[in-house]
Length: 191
Ligand code: DGP
Ligand code: NA
Ligand code: NA
Image (cartoon, rainbow, N blue to C red; front, side):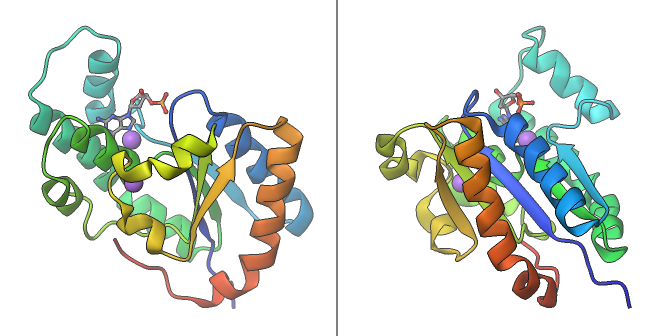
């Protein structure tokens, strides 16, 4: 029987090296285990909703904060079925940003965290979250990253990204290799 794929998520501020680490872990999983592995990123700008978000991000649109939040959230919901298909067919996914970015960005505007999070409730849950942090100060101030609730989850790994690309990826690969088999035995979770 095909074992399910894992859902690995990278979160963190802009320019902490998420894209590089997403690519590196994707290669590590494909090469070391010879398993199908795909990288994804949110927002996915290729969909119609993603195109609206792209226009917003390029500063050509003004939008109500909650309307914007719902669009980012919809952009994840429209990927739900394909994410589940990939995982159920044994493909690992390595994802650049997801619901925690969504909650963090909107909550930072003063909008209720529970309202923000409720839009994400029911989406497929990541098996591991690598939170890339550039400084130890950031690591203690993550309250602004959508609330401390997420860090209580055992799968939330704070990674010091203030090192060479190779040092960071070595640590991430080690954590992944250590947790891989036990995570594969767990059912896919939901937020
Ligand atoms: P990126 O493609 O990772 O460079 O993200 C583009 C920008 O969009 C980045 O500044 C972070 C922001 N962003 C990503 N996801 C969300 C989200 O769900 N909600 C909001 N408000 N902003 C987001
Ligand atoms: Na996003
Ligand atoms: Na968060």
